[in-house]
Length: 488
Ligand SMILES: C[S@@+](CC[C@H](N)C(=O)[O-])C[C@H]1O[C@@H](n2cnc3c(N)ncnc32)[C@H](O)[C@@H]1O
Figure 1 (cartoon, protein in one colour):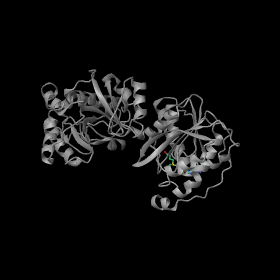
Figure 2 (figure 1 turned 60 degrees about the vertical axis):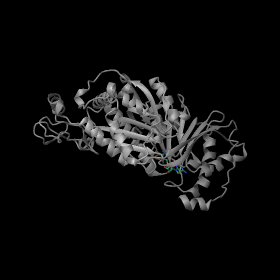
Figure 3 (figure 1 turned 30 degrees about the vertical axis):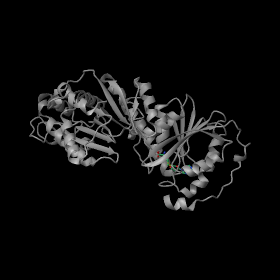
Figure 4 (figure 1 turned 120 degrees about the vertical axis):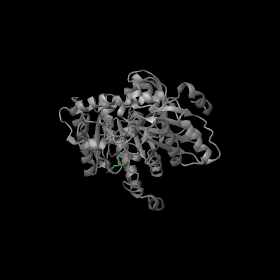
C-alpha cells in the first residue's frame, strides 16, 4: 500500500517507459498482489478458500466485495481455479488514503500525472503471463485471444474478438479474407505470423473506473477519461472501448484508490450455466452457500427449489463426494436444470474427463416431497423473494410449509439448511414459529442483484418429526397487503 508521495518516489526506480506487448518476457517468477471481486458478504469465505488452495492470507478490503492476496506468478493458474471469485485483477498500485485535491480540475490533473508515475512493470508481466495461460486454455476453441495480420496497416491489426471467433471465422494472415476456423493449418499460420512480426501489434486498451463515496468532486467517467488519456500518451497504446487487449481498472472507494489490470474478461460466476432462468444465482454465491454447510462425503443434499440448478450443479462439481437432488415444481425450471447438467457433462466428455456428475433432477412440490422422513443431510436453496419469482403474499403460506417439510426430511440433530431469501420479514416470522424443529445458527447478509438478502444457516433440532406443535401446520392466512403492494 502506498502513499501518494511513495508513488512519486517510485518514479525513478519503478516507472516504465512506453512499452509494447513484446517488451515483456514470459516466464519470470515475481510476486504481485492479486485483487478479486467476490459476492458481498462472502469475503471471509473467499479468503478462506484462498488460504486453503493457494496457501496465503487474503486481506478483506474496506470496500465490500473485494479481497487482496499476494502470489508468485507460478501460482497464477491456481488463481483462476478459485470458485468464490467473480473477477480477478493484478494490482499496479494501492493508495489507502489518497488525498484528493479540492477542485475537480486539480484532481483530474493529478490523476493524469499519476499514470506515468505508477510501477506498471510487474503488473504488465502478469497480464502477459495471464494471456499465455488463457491461450493455452482456449487453444482448441480459439478463445478470446486477439489475432494479428502480419502486413498490417496502422490501427487495423487487431481483427477478431471473442464473439467473432464464436462465429467460427478468423482472418487469414495472407489475404485478410474470412476462412472457416478449423482449416488444418490456420492456427499454425497465425502463430507464425505473430512470431514473424511481433512488433506490429499495437496494444488496445480501455480504462474502467468504479467510484463509491460522496466526497469526490469528479465523476467516474471524468476520472476514466483523464486517467485513460494519460495512460494512452504514456504507453502509446490505442484506446478501444470494446475490442481491448488490456483493461486498466481505476477503483476509487472514498479515500482508497486501487489501480489494477484485469485478468478476467468475463465474470467467473457464469461458469456453469448455459441455460439461464429469470433468477439464476451466481455460481460464486452458490459456492459460498455450499461452503457454509460444509458438505461431507456421502451426504445427501437437496435443493428443493432449484430453478436452473445453479446451486446443486456447483455442489456436484466442487463438492463431488456428496450426492445432490435438484427439484422444482416448474417444468421449465426442471428442463433448464437438465440442460445445464447435460451441457457440463458434454463439456467434460469433450475434454476427455469423466462426464458423470453426482446429481439427479426431479419435478416436485416442496410442500409434499417424495422423500423419506429424516433421510437428508443438507437442504440448500434460494427461496422465491416474492419479487421476480412468486409473490410476497404467497410467501406467507409458502415459507412455513417449506420449513415444515424440510424439517420432516432432514435428519434430526445433524441436518442443516442454508436458505437464501430477501423476504426477511416473512422468513423471520416463519422461523420464529418453528423453534422446536430449526435453530438459527448464523446469517450472512449478501447483495443479490442489488437486493439486500440473508443467507440463513439453520440446524435441525433433535426433535423427532411428528412430535412438536409445529408439525401440525395450519396456514396463518396472514397477508401483509401493504408490503405486498409495494414490492411484488
Ligand atoms: C429463486 S428461484 C430459484 C433460482 C435458482 N437458485 C437458480 O439459480 O436458478 C425459486 C424457485 O422456486 C420454485 N418454486 C416455487 N414454489 C415451489 C414449490 N412449492 N415447490 C417447488 N419449487 C417451487 C420456482 O419455480 C423457482 O424456480
